[in-house]
Structures are given as C-alpha cells and as structure tokens.
Image (cartoon, rainbow, N blue to C red):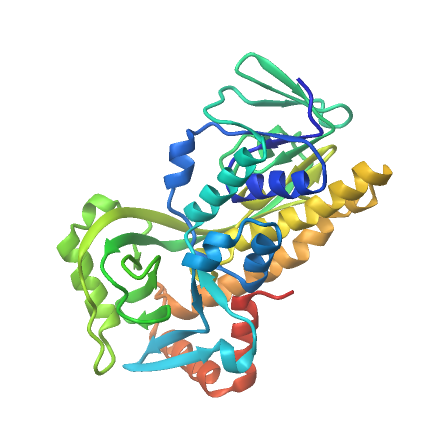
Amino acid sequence: MRTQVGIIGAGPAGLLLSHLLHLRGISSVVLEKRSRDHVERRVRAGVLEHGTVDTLVQAGVGARLLREGLPHHGIELRYGAESHRIAFDELLPGRSITVYGQQEVVKDLIAARLAAGGDIRFEVTDVALHALEDRPYLTFGGERLDCDVIAGCDGFHGVSRPAVPDGVLTTYERAYPFAWLGILARVPPSAEELIYARTDRGFALHSMRSPEVSRFYLQVPPDTSADDWPDERIWAELKARLETVPGFTLATGEIFDKGVTPMRGFVTEPMQYGRLYLAGDAAHIVPPTGAKGLNLAVADVRVLAEALDAFFATGSADLLDGYSRACLKRVWRAQHFSWWMTTLLHTFDTDDDYGRRLQVSHLDYITASEAAATTLAENYVGLP
C-alpha cells in the first residue's frame, strides 16, 4: 500500500492535515489506535482562536462551528472580590474567540474526510516507523504503508517522537506543582463569558460548551484522583472560589464527566527528523491556562500543509526544511503566555505574603493599563 503522506493520529492535527492535503490534491492515510467512538467523545480543549476558526471555515469544515459555536468577545478576571473584563471587542475590534469543544471539531473533520473518500484506519495496532531519513514507511497490524513523508500527530504519548534516534532531539520541560480537576455539568452557564478566578484557595475557571452544558476547572494538588472529589465537594469549592463578587450565584447541576489534567510545559526541538514531521502534542504541550493546545496544533498543520504542497508541486524541500523553525517561534510565544497566565492566577505552596501581593499587583496593572490588557487580549485571541 502506498500514499504520499502517512499520518499517525486522528486528533485535530492529523485530521485537519489530511483534509488540507486533500484540498491540495495530496493523498494521505490516517492511522489511529483508538476507535472512532473514542476519539469523537474524548473531551479536551474548547477555546478556538480567531485564526483557528478562520482556518476551519476556509477549509469547508466550519458550518456547524459557525452555527453552534459560542463567540466570545472578552473574558473576565476575578480577584480580590472584584470583576474585571478584558474586552476583546474594544481592544481588538473584529477579533474574538469561539467556544466549541475539541471533540466537535474532530467529529466535523472525520465526517468531512469520510465524505470525501478519505482513508482513516481506526483501532490499528503495532504502529512503527521505518527508514525516516530516506524512504519512510509505516507498519501496522501486519501491513506496510510506503509514503514520501510521515506526519507524527499522535500526541505526547505517541510512537512518533520516540522513533527519532537518541541525541537528535532536545526537550525542554516544566512540571507545575498542581493539576486541574475538570468537570462537565448539565447546567446553563452562570455567565456569558469565561471567568478566570484567582483566590487564596486556588484557581478556578468557569467556562461552557453549549447553552445547556457548563465546563469548570479547579486547581488541585498534582496527585489528586477524581475519586477524591464527590460532586458535593466540587460544587462547594467552585462556589467558594467563584461566588466572590456581589450578585453572582453559581448554578449547579448534574456532573456527567470528571477528570484530572496534569499541568506541564514541554517542547521538543527540532520538530522534524528526516522525512518525519511532528505536529501538535507530539511536539509540544502547554498548560491549559492560556487555551493554546488545540490552536497550536492547527497552526502547525497550516505550516506543514503549505510546505508539503510546495514539495509535491515543485520538488523543493525548502519549506519542509524550515518547518520546525517556522513553528517554534509561535510555540515558544504560546509557552510564555501559558506560563504567564498560570503563574499569575494560581497559588503556589512556596508563596509567601510578598509573592501573593505581587500577583494581585500584577493583576491590578493588567486591568488598569490598556496596553497590558491589549497584550493579554492579543495573545489569548491569537496572533496572526
């Protein structure tokens, strides 16, 4: 079996890359170890940057996103018993974010690829990469797939990055001393926009997935199990961290999904080796505070699709050779923004009164300075 691009992973990065290549007349096969049902139900990110929405719409897979997604024109910073809105619509006219679950993006992309006759292989086993420097090919489940290029879009724990020989890649990593407990609840959102709350009890985030479903996160110790948090405890703690301003009451309801997410930053350099190109979480992880994970994956495959288009159209590998360099500037900017938001809003066991007061002072500066608020807005909405 042969294709031009072998893609490992049917998450947003792999599926969008396959679709963008299809639009350019380039063949691909997507290999995914999980079932279709699993990847379509897997709850992940939900905040799409302005540029991500544009990419999906321009690629012809944004109809449901435009119909069902929730455009947001600002976020709220809540601290010190006060609420402060960062107004994207005033600071960055015409630019916004859209709340639309990652699993919904995946559903849309799978539907589009299958409708176009795309080749997605679910529940494949024993995927391995071979001959990456010259004539790459993949093996899986007793089959062989020859290809010109391999795209590793299989996440942090995938097989792509470990296939690179030792000593080629340099990795940078930071583990944060807390995690996020995330829940989905069948309850209408209690606010129209996302609320980022900094309290001495820890961080909390109020988000949403639809007019009927809300998404919440709580800062918790890194060794926390979701079993440690019965529903009653979750709602009590969310109320303690979010009901800190006059007139705000948190609506509660049935919790139907619960999980713990570790907080870490990770980057591998370069994001390529031979004919293997890493994208999305296979190459980098950001703490979710800045809402950058899915958006970075989309940015990666935009660059990769353009480079592959040039390669197959002209034979020139110049853009492919510069793929990692082109991506890493954005990756590190997103790392910095996510680190900044994380350290700004979370409590640390090492904090003293001085450190806690510095956090509040920094928040005061952001909410009082148009320049500082614009910087936050530009990074959150996404730079061009």
